Length: 334
Image 1 (cartoon, rainbow, N blue to C red):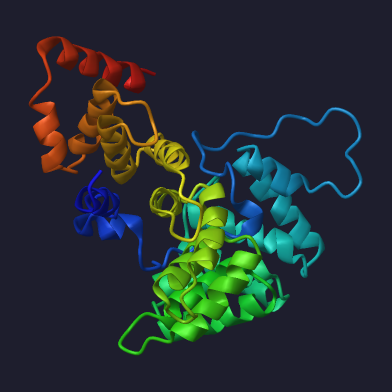
Image 2: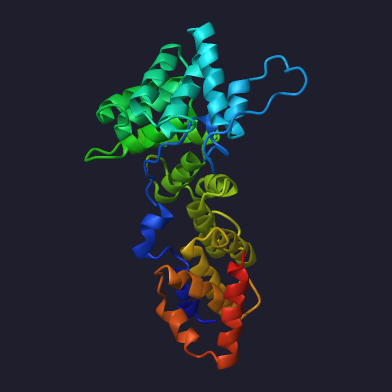
């Protein structure tokens, strides 16, 4: 293979400029839900009443949060209200009431009421409530949007070790005309070390680009892998590119293909495009034009056009096109 050809293969695995926003090469502000209420909380239905509990309740069991996580929002609301009536300092119950009012689960959505409960809990030092007030100030939910006030609340939550607060402080540090990359890097590191995947990805980007820290591809790969393991699609793709080109990690084309496939199965069009190119060229995987065109058609369907792959598509026989269409149908079948 000529040096020129080898260089071209390296370059076409870099992120397409038109899709830089999809890759999130710059961190973006995306406030997260409080850590105790992250998973499985989007209701597929509206309020149900928690069925009667069979047997004795375990000591220390949080009935209100348990009901909420199981989708019994009305019961969660009632249990939380009972707790607050008994104990005006029950910050956990207050935070849950704020969550319920904010999302309109089991009650009519009311951002003013949500903020009321969040602030009561925040006064008790409940870090998830403090974080929720910060998000409300940032987004203008129940109050006038005020970035300075949001930053103040994020700092209070971060002081209590809230990982998502550190991440958002990092983003705030690089927004606007004056960008403080060192401060941002410090917050992203604290967020990442506490398990925040967006913080890990952002720190990886900083190491890759030498912003706020000394450029270090090995460190970039380390944090990129952490974010990829937490299924951040942009990190999976970036790690795939680094793995294919041997930047910060050992060169491994097969390993890169696996990463692109992982992101492609998560409906990322850039990963679909990169995987298609690998199949068509036979790099990291056994050459398979039909498989490559399957992934390319899926990427193209959402607007990611590729002239080189279009040329390959134009060379397919009628039989091959039928195979590609069938492969797409099988992948999309429920």
